[in-house]
Amino acid sequence: MIKWMQTIGIPTDEAETSLSTCPGDIFFLQDDFIRKHWFPAELPPEQLEPTLAFAAEIRRDEKFRLLAWHLHRYCLFTPLSRFEGDRIPDLLPGLGVKSGMLFLLVALSLIPTYLARAEREGFPVRYGEAGAKRIGSVLCFYAQLFDGAFGIRPQSLAFQLHYLGTATWRIGRFDFQIRRTDGVFPVIFRRDGELLAFCPDGTPLTSDGDRAAKESVPARTAALREDGTRLTGIPIDLRTGLARNEPLTIDRQAGWELLAGPGEWTLYFHIPGGGGMTPERCRDSFREARDFFRQYAPDKDFRVIWSSSWIFNPVWREFLPGSNMAALIDRGNLFPTAAHTPNPGMFFVFGRHEGDPAEFPARNSVEKAVLRAYREHRLRACGFFLPTDRV
Image (cartoon, rainbow, N blue to C red; front, side, top):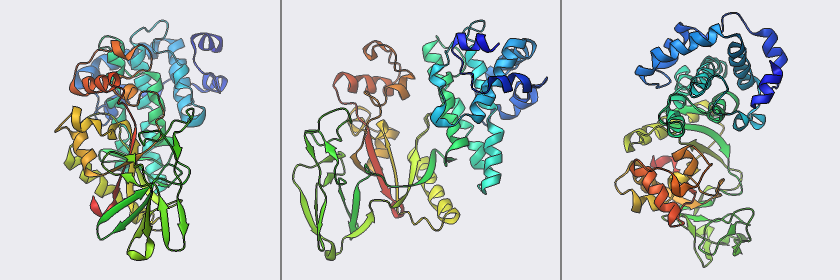
């Protein structure tokens, strides 16, 4: 069995224990369990009965029953830093396009751990339950790859592990976690409602003012210097998220309050897929998370909510006017940030890095906008922040 798993590309960490501990009745292959968690995971009603029938097939097949248990344990006990979901093939020999349903059942198996964690750490159980919504949001990627087939890709399992192994909670539309600022986050000041942000010291910049990629040679490097009460640095255009060309000096004694700087606590949010990102849902999510974390962690005096994503590319104002994404961008302030992939947003819209993006089918306005930005070399990631008293 282990040799077979290795042959098809399944990581075999602790596989011997998986095989020796596999129960006769695996809990997440049972009808009652699947029905209980189906709708909280925002899965389509018409796929419930076919999935129940598939689970029955897995229960009767010794090889795939053992594989299901091993994948469950692999997700449960493998640290996110060592999780190799990308190694697992989308299509397993013997299952074909039904493989996606097996990975989906494994994702459902993690939901009880979210609830247990919420209870253990003193979070509302509904925040643990909300982590299940992420499962339904990644169905589109499997369908795009396999002509509408139902299921999820194995690499999507890594996203679910954040609710298990990192300080991340789903509150309303977004995922949130408290974290300190790093070397990418700007230094932000406020005076009489006016916001001013500087690039942190040592920021590598491109010629147009974006943050330069690690592997590239920057056109310039931002410096941030203090001389008594005076501070000089490279300011940021908060509408475009680009560094300005000329340095700026401010006098801290002229009423400029430090809102967020190096090492400060902040409330970070991540945007799970799934659509429905209306201004009202965004506002409610921000406010609920702000109020909850202030109560839950009163020692973390955060005054900024922020994120970094392809979603905050200001080009969406032009390509998707009136959209929820454009409304969210206009709600906050932008700053240069690092892109983690060559074409930011391509994977999260199309669910894959493989292939030539120019040949990807574009079936909706977002897909068309991303491909247009790709053709015009305007794909980028951008940082976004909001003072907590402006949400």
